Image (cartoon, rainbow, N blue to C red; front, side, top):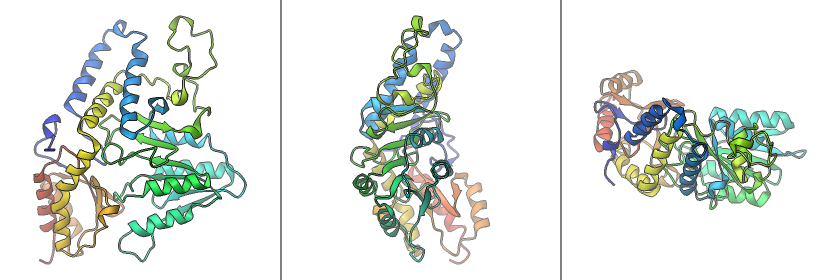
Length: 385
């Protein structure tokens, strides 16, 4: 795969290495949004079928991406909505606890903390061994050892949002399954850029915002709810989630049956006529590229950066625990932070500062030149050469 920058309207003067904060908009998504706005001028053009056709198509594309039945996919407005829905359907027995990652993203942490408070359950925070210079091996080992027959739920990100550290979801999912714990994964920072297979990883609920690696927009996301959530209680009672919702002439013949499977968990107004066309274009493009090719492209693209850091004796995480698309740089000791900030700004390099690390997140719109300029900025910020 070559760079796909031609499919975006990115400013050619900006080196955008910040997809982990927000993805740029595809040209096709921009066109779809404009067409949707024009359609909104004349609402009479929107038919009852339009409330359901595109949501079904979008769910199907997401299901293809994560290897599930489209009926198990719900449309949600945010990850916090998806977590609340899942946790609202999980019981807790006396003496049970929940597990969350150290420095987990706030939406996941607070959702699980609230569940624990409600059920008077202990919240166990699991991190890596403190004395290790690299975190991957010990952190994964500690997670697996923490999951016991007293674990009710594990809620964690698929990769750590601050540094891209990969977790062994397959082993963790298997351990959860063996002890009867519910496995909830925040896939926001990997779904669309790295493999997320809900069947193979035995994930019970996968929650994803769409405005990062799915090339969607803010305010729209996805939730996969597996068999553990069949027949559960939704967060709200949307009329669109009932089995007779497509019969607009008889909506007040109140049907108490929900739509199939995870259809009951859709957010109200799930047929968003502006955001869904944009999201559909993003998913269509990702499935055309394939996650495997995206990941391979990102790995090759960032190889020179890793080699540069190695040449400065920076200790790097083993590749088996490193994401290809997102990583937090542990900078050489001789780099001056203020000088680095100045050099990044002068070179128009867009990155993030997360947990004291320079978080770099690349995608198929990036080119070799972006990495070269970043290396140049780092080298220019060293005090002792």
